[in-house]
Length: 343
Image (tube, rainbow, N blue to C red):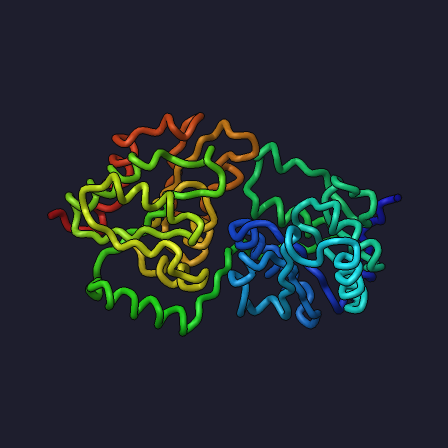
């Protein structure tokens, strides 16, 4: 199928836009600058985002999104009849433009069969069904994921004026964090440091005993409160850190919604973490992240997946297990020491 050239007159007529990003929460947050640029380019268009239910809350309330369709490719609309039902749903919506931000054979086929006239994505996984596509070089990690997303929309002439991550908290999540901190005797004005020791891929995980050592040393040297965070499925990992510590910490693993996590991170001095979704939420709410990376992991370089923006700190080695406690503590204690009293 021959790729169409960019036609600015056709794009002007766009009224109904479908954006697809169904992988993890971090990837969705890193797509928000592109979505915001699309909204600015099409201020009157209706913008619908298909997102994974585990991530969709990150963009709820965003001013650049009109509608969110929750879709888990592994659970929703399964089987032939389920897929046919989903196709009919998309076709009835009469979208003018669809953009697939992460290469997907399923969605490339879906938007083609739905008859969406302008279909944008990567030249992979049946990319010949797209009308506008770019070569997928993301695995080379030559740019940040934010820029890769912007490259895709620039294919159809949309040029962003800014590249700011977006994450929206709400009053209920702010109130919930207030209540949790009061219930756990966290004084107003306390210096909080969030720690997320888990990750979706074991190859990205700094050893748990080293997280424990860092937490203990920060607690014993500085007047700070450590708060452990993560999803319900990460409780075993977080429990492993607590079991190796000498000091008590506030453990909110599995206790927070996505918006509540954002509200908590807004109040923290730093987030200390592996490469994971909370890193990008932290960056989006303006809290510096200190992140560990093993740079030799294919497709996993900090150049692509590091915390986006200014004020963050990446500590990296070829393998994440090469990063020592001493070098981490030296880097972190310098940053913490600028904001916190010593004991």
